[in-house]
Length: 435
Image 1: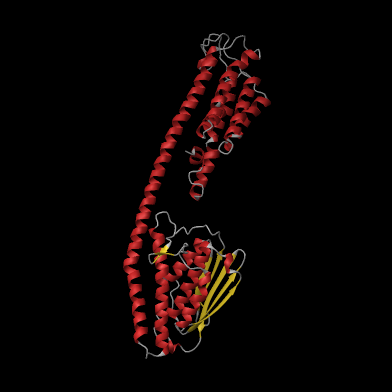
Image 2: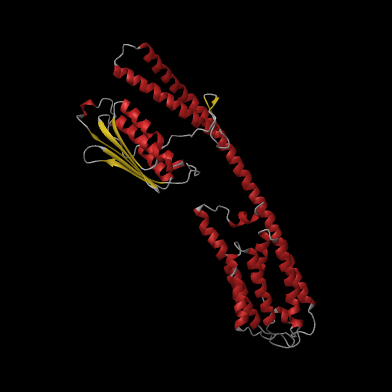
């Protein structure tokens, strides 16, 4: 288990965790800082009031001959107390370095003055952090060094004639409790992380089942109907040899469009049925020898324009830039925005001329689809009326633009037409559509 990653960044890319991580790194240090610096200063200045310890002084001073005298903490000792706390916010990124620094400052403080009070608070936090990060040998060695060096500072430096057994036992108890509690917390966090992984796996299984269900529904409700349309258009072309050329052209366009839609739909169904999310390599039950792209890209815009022209819509196309530089979700969403815009012209303004302009730069793709009246609207048979600015098509195009952190604007023009303009940043080919 990667305990370091589990503890440090439970949701690295989620903005909701940024404030929590900042508080965990800095906010949790504040109680330790208050305990180590002011707490140690107060404990060092505390003195017993009488030789027998009957009045005043802390509980540990009673019965001590002459009571406890205040400990003078100089600037160097105070600086060591502060430095031990200041390095703690970096404990997640540099756990071993922070452990060594806090150990050095704690031992240095004990060497300068007679230690009294919670002067080991920062070292305690650094020990626990190193243990939880998986550096257990480092934590054990640091705890052992502290147990040896802190009680022996007094006799080695001549401030006490003999080694205080009580100080040794206190140091051993402190190190043992610190490491034992750290181990309990580590085991608890591992169990929590394991439950999270199990829930995530269950969610992935449910999502896979849902993809299969959607694929089945799409096949039953759409694929069969598209196949029937394609078959009937082919039969009409075969039997209608004496039909007008315009009618035969329309039937051929219906047949070709429905065939292409079937291929694309089956490819998407293969992706939905794939549990691990990789595209299906088969179409119509036969292998293609290579993975199909689930959706079309800018390389298919010319075909889209030709189909629209075959349907009787005057469409102009201008492409500036290298289409091969656009990949992934930007390529797919750019095509879909153009497709939806041209389809809206065909549905809502069949008597208009549409101009599709695509400008491909090194960092962005600019799309503009604008239509304008090309003659009297009396010929607009089958038009479904003006496009609502909040229709599903506009919402879908805006969602596709937002998926790549792009922008999209759509609205009527002064000459009675409609204009859709989008700017899509070029993202890497491996980025997935989050929707």
